[in-house]
Length: 562
Image (cartoon, rainbow, N blue to C red; front, top):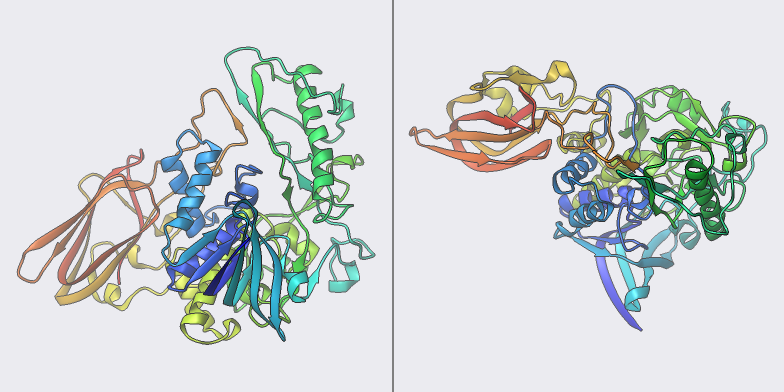
């Protein structure tokens, strides 16, 4: 056996979207980071191993941006055929691009060394390389979903459903229990141009009529999320037991679609079925603050908010597939957006432990809204940025300047409701031909400059002024009605693509005091947030859009000089 040792600023455990965004954000802000993932791929429930599409906040202009939007747009650019192995490559590439980030795949965390209430190091076993990895870090971020560091470190955590009286909530049962929402094995289907036969395995269940699937709607465009079990078992230790039962159900449901009744499935084939269940709930940490149903309903207007939710409080019955007294879940109303505070991402009793994802400090009721993956992703970016700030400023994470953190997150294109992003002083000091692009608001139709062919935006100065960078935010259509990947593959797929509204080609002309000029010419842009380094004394800067991804008009939210 081999042992490798690391000494780093931040160790992130868990490579789902929360962990990936946490690690990338921390690395980009200058601290050494190690990301430990127990699977061969990144993405968690979004990966090819589970294949759940990315959901987030409801409502106009509420789509999550920042690193998660960057990843999704990159996928549409590089993975036009929407193949899951290529999606996994996009996620992998995002981690590998960061020189401050060390990625350890196939590595399961199995031990933690403590010094009082502080984690000194963790040990991970990389089975395919027969290697132990020992990682010593200033901070540990548990983004594993299952809160794997909780039993190893003695961190306080919750499991199951609280009683109504515990937090004065209405959603929980009268008495507390150890039941949770369950887990699902997804499957994917593909349309062909001919009839396809399906023979189920002998061990699959049989559902001969729709009456055998009460309250379980199964049109061809669903992702069969209701094939769910485990909430009445142990959602950590009974995972394999759940998988075995879920596979029998999943094959039986597809057999029903193909061979029992007319479901329009004749030309469809079963392309893939997941052997790794996607989890909704297990351990939740106890943080400096526990978010409740009441906080969600009151919009979470915390002074230290660093992210937001906006999914309904979507509470699934613990018996899952075997709940037959009505629909398998209840959508309790929730505002969109509602704020999530930094305090709920910091352990209550372990001094250097933070967390992001579905394991943050929330009650079961609040979890039913905060658990979806786009929310988890922006939580990861927020805590990764917060830890980087704490390390760089040599302070503890709960003592960082929250206003400074909020400004940095918004600068990195993370929307924070009820917060105003500060525009740079040099941007304010310049004469601008389109004031709308310097109002500090990077979403919403009323904040968008709209141009046509031949239009441009110009900044000019009374005297030469030093400009370090240019910040641009384009319109990636935050109200598009499709997710990162499909749940099924139609014969002719047209919906999933780079948003037409994105500016594809543009030119930036930089005019110096003597009248000379330089130009930055960009072709084939596919991102919403773009920076350009200038580091020059300039007299004028002119932005000219030249082409979009298909839209007839040019749309810009921010054109800022830094």
